[in-house]
Image (cartoon, rainbow, N blue to C red; front, top):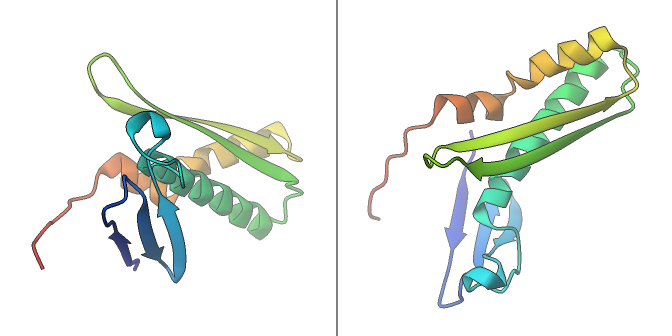
Length: 128
């Protein structure tokens, strides 16, 4: 379904990424020794969830011919005192009534990236 490659040389810690025919750069902030040349890895994770959420809600509203004007997906990644990771997601939905907004809130819980993150994904690593 998806394929990507990440490459790093001697740069601290700028990483070139090719995914879906697009070139991206990820890096760490200067406070962590990087040059802040691009989003950090967790920023990219939030970007993926935010994009999937916004796109899915737009598709659903379009299919229903609802007058959705705008969706904003606010995201915050954090870890609790126990080290458990969590993402807080806040939806701002403009142009719909309360019932439609509630339906989109429900749909947001079942977007593809949401389900992937909630379910976990096995990662199989090998040497080339």
